[in-house]
Length: 211
Image (cartoon, rainbow, N blue to C red; front, side, top):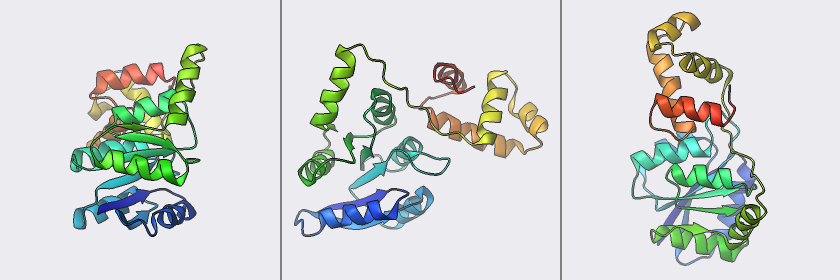
């Protein structure tokens, strides 16, 4: 039995997932969450096999952030990205963060179940309609809209100071924060931009025009 949970900031979407899975003999719904923190707390107590991950969450921490965070904590778990957008940048960023597959929210029940099963089996799954869209963008040399993570005002302030080559202590003094708070924000920025270090953070900040 494949145990499934989901993260989406719209409760009615979570109810829709539950309805789709109702009656499926191979899959069981283990609950949905509108908060990544609540999902993380749940997974510490009860494991699951596949997470359905909304990319565009309403808070400061988006689906890419939580994908990367959960991948580190639960490396064996499948993570299926779900979005209303088909831009290449979104798909690439999510898969680079540790996602196993990607489908559109408009996908039908058959695709939905195929994607879950494939991710559960350790395979990468990209919806055929999505593949066609990405291929069409490529053939037409149509630049897809680069996925830009949602940054809070404070994260943007700290990002600008990091790019200005200020140290953690200097940033803390400048913004009247503790060094621990600055380091926490820096860690969130690294996760959101899908990089490994400050050098990558600076590069992506310029490339994604976040400054």
